[in-house]
Length: 289
Image 1: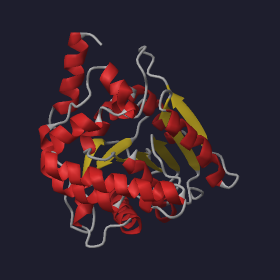
Image 2: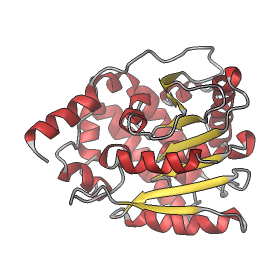
Image 3: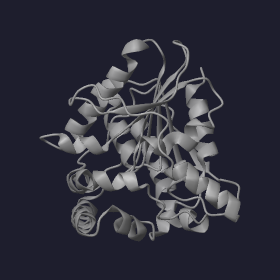
Image 4: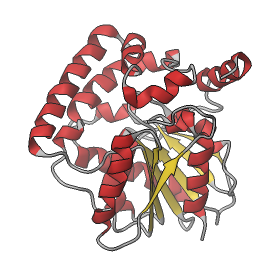
């Protein structure tokens, strides 16, 4: 990546959101309207990943070809739940999506989730019955018992490290993982907005309480009329996850897409940054009749 391009990408990642998140009440999550559209256009509600924030979707929203509204939900406030487990978190997401759609109840709903947000989107599918479900780099299939226990221990240790080291130091270490090789290759690993530091205590709790190791059963994706799973071409574990998820549709169609950014660099886990145009194309497909 050239120096000017790296500078532009860094600016896009770190500048302030275009408008503040909506705050309605503590029973729902805040969100940011990244795009508006006419009443009968699709309504995209997007959930970001661990340690993220709504503006992580800005690069994707800017590349949409279809006319659709785009609403990005903030997930750190999940930590305010008195009981924090996947059913309660999914219920809070469902209430939030319903609040977003109050003004446009007949608009087709496209529910999208990246990584951790993908697990939440999958868990909320039965309650929301979206017209389309888009899962980006998301592991939603339950782990085997031994793997689940190990994942719980790992996430408890990561939670402690985040509490001890703070968000900036933690993210530098986090992005050293092979699953973020695409970020490293593009020179944007560890670029985390300072605003995320304020949410550190929330993510400490979320990481510990909503570990994938605590998921006991596969979510039911069948209520979604259309379902798409996309993973980076070099993110092998998540490409395999997409193939495993085909069986969860119980005979209904699930499209698995493999993303190639086309820039010669690895395309791994952070697709919202590594390949925003590809993710936008997937959402365009999800919005089509």
